[in-house]
Each structure stands twice: as C-alpha cells, then as structure tokens.
Image (cartoon, rainbow, N blue to C red; front, side, top):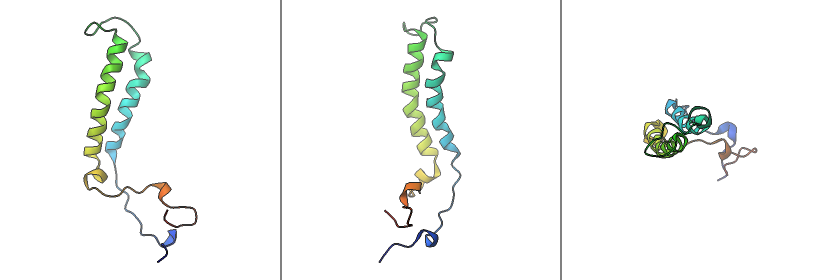
Length: 94
C-alpha cells in the first residue's frame, strides 16, 4: 500500500519542550570562556583559570545533556520525534 500524501498524514501534536533550552548552557560556557575566564589568576588546583573553566565546562556538558534528556517529555514517553526531513517534497515517507 503506498504511503499517504503529506496533506493526509496525521497531525502530530506539538509538545512544549522548555528543557531543551538547557542545551544552550554548554555552548555558552565555551563561547563565554575567552571573555569571562581569559586570565591566569586565580589558579584552581594549580591550573590557570581558563584551563579550569574549560575542564569544568567539559565535565558539566554531558551532565546537562543527560538532565535535558530526562526532563524532555518526548524522551520520557519514548515517543518518536517528528523531524522535518522525515517527509520528502512529494509527500511520501522516506
């Protein structure tokens, strides 16, 4: 049976996902590092402050990504996430 055209495809409900905003934190930590932490003093565990900042951001990033996944309702419900690339221009499923 051929797939249904895009105009007949069932509408997926839009879910609010505010937890995804947490994914900006790791990016901001790295982007702001040269502006906020670009100095040698104070030393943290004998490391220059910039190195300590980057190491801290590297450790914090996977934890925030894990937390974001756990707070995301789509992830918690194990629902398929609709992606724009799932449907081709002709309206057929790929």
